[in-house]
Length: 152
Image (cartoon, rainbow, N blue to C red; front, side):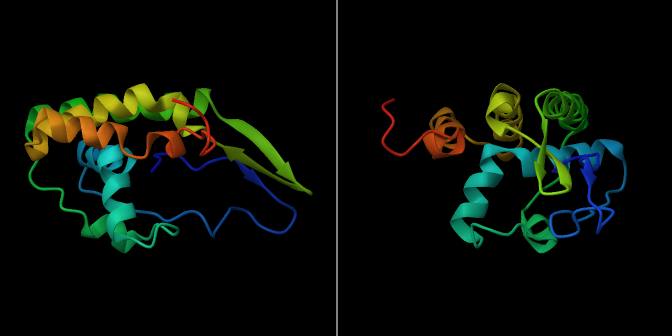
């Protein structure tokens, strides 16, 4: 989930239509909260438990229960999502396949911010410390790009 369109240049297309879906919200704070939810480890766990584990659709995003976040949660989410987007940009690279150039992101480099997002969401959803620990560390070796046989 991003609040910007990733860089993309191709001789045959103006944007990567297969990978971009647009979602709108009532306001910037609400959009940031939704961005935090979909960027979170909590959402990752939910998606891999109930989704098809491959293609994220707008329905997948719409079906996740957001609830009614407090004003302080909305404010904190706006700050965290802004930091996450800046971190994504800072840690991105431009890759090429043939004549096509596109921006790629290394989620693992932004994991400390995602952990902060999960702490915010744990408060919002009423998760206890054990549940938060499970969510933050869920499938971590795979998500951080470690090979399956790498030692901890």
